[in-house]
Length: 362
Image (cartoon, rainbow, N blue to C red; front, side, top):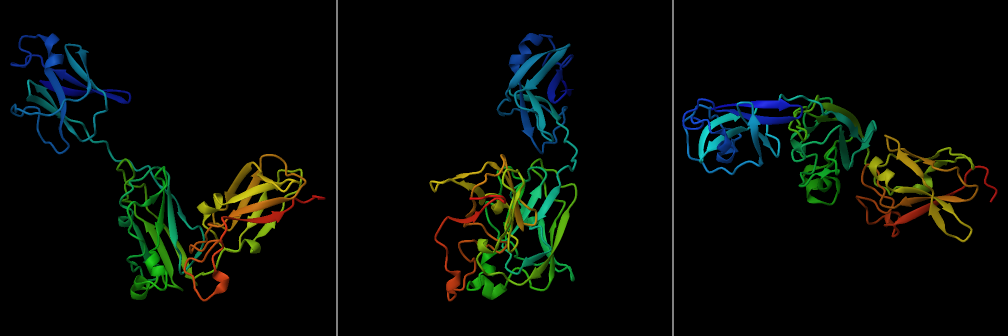
């Protein structure tokens, strides 16, 4: 009995030629073979050759359909054959032939799109690093493929990132957020006292993504990626919307509203934390439809309305959970000094910044 693969576009069938095979099709009664034969995977690591002795096996059959193929038969599986797996044809529970599906050659197509934050300098108490990929990734091996080294010496800094399960992937598995170990950032905790900060002030660190990281298909990255950061002083203060600068649009236009922050903020959180509202004479406000986007460096937000700006007062609504690169929010300081009253938490989910488009006479 001889087996072969039949490739038809993105579908593959298994073709069986049993002509002249004594004991299987000696009588040429092909009509009964589809009911007598079963196709089942023999195991991903099998090295059994088609000419191996028959063996009694009890594998479950594969779902699929048999049909005539010229002078032989073909099997079309319900689910695709898997690359690198050996499949066996059985007759009355005995293996009479086997064939391995060739492994697909690995072709690197996934790449690193960005390493964030997108700034040249980060605070000593940096809390997050994010990596954006062009396609879904394998999601359980990040810390084996992300490294932090000293730019001057090449020495690796160990224990920088928190080893956590599950890791912080977005729904598409294309963006991973890595937390620097908070226990080493917060000054009163034992890990900080024993090991110090994950980074070192005044040094330049390099975050490297190695090319061996497999994507969701098991293929390595096309190439590695790296980003350098100068490590500056720690930042321990609430985010201050009252210090932001608003570049105001003109009423009756669709010019953008640009909000410039007093420090770099977490870009992803910015996009979900700001809203433009229009005020009504009765004291109510409603969202202004449009598209807002944080700048790559997290220093500004740009909002373009779907309709021209009203000639009336507006407000920028800010979610108080919005954070900077060190995890300090509008509502609280991440590593708070309890003796500083100015760092007391803000007990409100939102803060509003009133503004009026230029040309407003109200």
